[in-house]
Image 1 (spheres, rainbow, N blue to C red):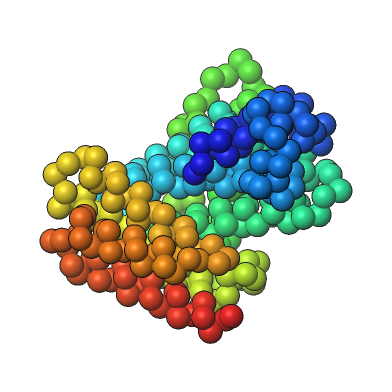
Image 2: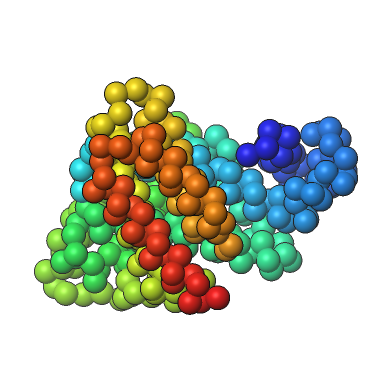
Length: 302
């Protein structure tokens, strides 16, 4: 990202936390970041778009760190999942974005309310996918219920642990405690066959991700993770591994945007092929195949 644009995002983030989103004016952001009004509107059509960019920048970093933990690891390993959640909890704590979420919830800005709702649903979808990795297809009918229960347990345990100021409870202890309860519940609900919500509902809650595209994006994420693991094994240089991962992430993010730039995707694919995936053709071909499937589905929707 353009350094000046990233500086605006970081400046606005700090101001929104200090003064509140509503109380921070665009002039405050211009003064803090040292840019002109014209430059601001070249970057962001509105203050609301800047708000969204702050969350986008934050979750991109968190997603990258979460996925890095999976490279070369078993996706069904609960300990890896616990570490992923610890990264997310610590990042939420440091960024203080939850404060902004609460402010938007009580505001009259319907667009931002819808945005917050969407990112929370995307988080639920990610967690549902990880539960599926851990517990397997046979438990899928019960996993949306358990994902929601897990989110509730985590939120309330974190809140009341914070209220008990004389009791020091670490994030990792809360995550592990809640995860242990979910493991017990998975066995219980699967034995009795009881559920409330069908996991397929997640597609109706995220209407812009139609069923076919949702599956396409899932396949893309799996193949991108497989390609990252393969580059991790085949590239001896840590710097090359990092560069390859960044290119894979960029392609994935571009493809999941509203208007993916096909020429850019094809150009970066060629770079990966020739510089980082010379000896891992099978994983590279699968990644490229899933990209082409997503692109063809997007053409049909247009």
